[in-house]
Image 1 (cartoon, rainbow, N blue to C red):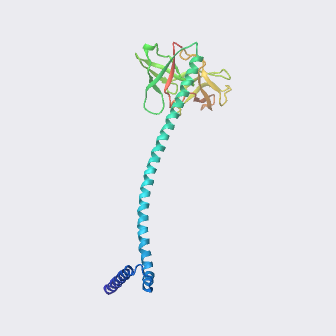
Image 2: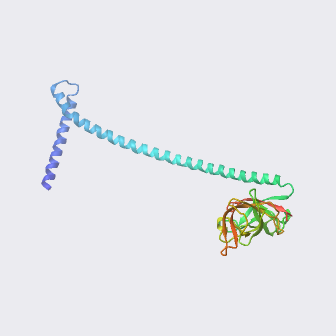
Image 3: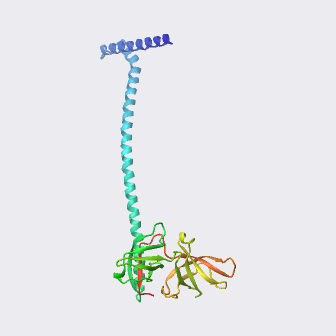
Length: 275
């Protein structure tokens, strides 16, 4: 192996010396059209071409590296622009939803000319995604009292259970302790809408005290009946999404999809002295 390496080194060295000699002859005969110049040129041409291609390859590699850096920078700039535009889109969507909520509340307030309504903002809520209870930014100083009805532009939210100088606590109709006198709009059958521990996590309520003969169908609209001395009549509660019988088969109950989205309450209206 050592002998082979020595022979290889001798061959490489001999080739290099021959190339240098030929290059020297080429420089010495440059400008001459003699046969020896042509021969030297012919011999050196592939060698020169080889080294030239190596030089071009090295130059091309560095150009590629430089271009890659530019591409990476452009890619980062494009990602920043996409993130900025995405944030702007989310901001506009939030403005659109807020505008829709405020428009609904304004329309309801204009329609409820016979009721004394105060608009409020939610300033605190219980932990979790669902609004079982929350605090609003109006209180005794704004004429609010315990049992005042709370609603949104979409329907019934709940009632006030505690009042401070400039705040009030609201318990919603999906709370398991809540109960609302209700009416089936289509049939005028009376019932009770109760908060249910198992349905609350889906933002739903339970329609109870229906007789077996009650003609209830899916999609029936449920509103407040006005009975019970708390909630005024005619406020939308929700629609029937399921109809079930009790274990004995003597009565039936229904699951109500509430009109209000109890995951995303931000503004509400309180009916002052609306009992």
